[in-house]
Image (cartoon, rainbow, N blue to C red; front, side, top):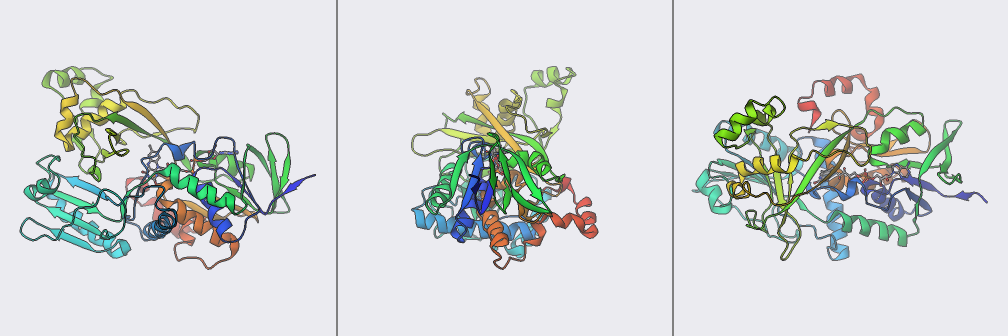
Length: 451
Ligand SMILES: Cc1cc2nc3c(=O)[nH]c(=O)nc-3n(C[C@H](O)[C@H](O)[C@H](O)COP(=O)(O)OP(=O)(O)OC[C@H]3O[C@@H](n4cnc5c(N)ncnc54)[C@H](O)[C@@H]3O)c2cc1C
């Protein structure tokens, strides 16, 4: 007998799981959630697990605020099983000339709805450091700390040349596995069924979704098909006859044991916001400069190397990330990882955290992994209906899929159940690319559209 469901979701990463959760909460419970891998084991298992509402884009900011509201609700109802903290993101610069622009940009983000901006100096300060754990009673918005002595007072481990540090406060990190498992288990209790299966075909008849074929050859009927396959969005879009405007980039992360305790265990996410040259000894630099293949290591590297402490208690692990050489790749697995990445990232990090140099003589053994950002040109996600009746998409969530998951699942559930949609809904629909004005707007976006 042919099995029948009210909705089928392809992909049980954090986005598919969240879609299942919020649909089930909205009353649609006869859902089949399919993944050829164990739930939450692909890209969603390789992130930095950080979140922030500090976005320079009105729609993205509103989505993240909603997502964080929902994560707070889940944390409150579950006793914070996914250990969400609110340590914030600290963006640090040593370039005095950048400070006026930083203040202007921060005011803009604040005015878009991220919360108030407070400016502090040694002479005039009401700055409250973040608590290490939990998220209650933390300020919203951002604090801008000006002056190196004042920054050193609160963050003595940073480079003494740092002249400004922007502390975004509705931000921090959590356990993405625990959040995902909580979303999944709650959905299952409400009736959602998970199966380890691959979707090989989507059946469309008369412009409507009819059902899917599984790897086993079984045909399962459903009037609703939700594509949540992460980096395989192009392939699954193809099953619907669509060429989705997305591409995938490989992003790496390294974990090392910080046995010297350079990054305090209570630190926020630390981001060096200046471009830089890697620190080398004079003889090392000369040797690299004269080597055609290694010459690039003496050239200017982009801003953005970042780190955070990982784990609790006696754990000494830190995560280090730096997108200095992003590659557009097909989502083949496993990808080839650049073995030089951990050392380069550690050297870059030493510009922000000078004591990292103590590791140069003997690099701690790194753990290197990563995954694909699935993204659109302008780095906004795809959430909502497709041109085929009953087909929906939730994905292209780039480097923010964990933080946006709850907001995205909630938005997709509103589309499907006919609930009223928030103002930002249209900005994330695929149909936005049918608007010539939108296409012109995104073509002129700087920095390849990174928001
Ligand atoms: C290095 C790195 C750091 C990151 N840091 C952060 C961060 O700090 N904060 C943040 O918010 N985000 C971060 N991200 C991004 C985040 O991890 C992703 O956006 C998110 O995990 C994407 O989730 P997903 O559910 O869309 O995809 P995935 O987790 O990849 O899940 C997709 C699932 O679909 C399944 N699938 C595909 N095709 C089929 C098919 N035909 N049939 C059945 N199943 C199928 C796959 O097996 C997979 O399990 C980071 C990512 C990387 C790589």
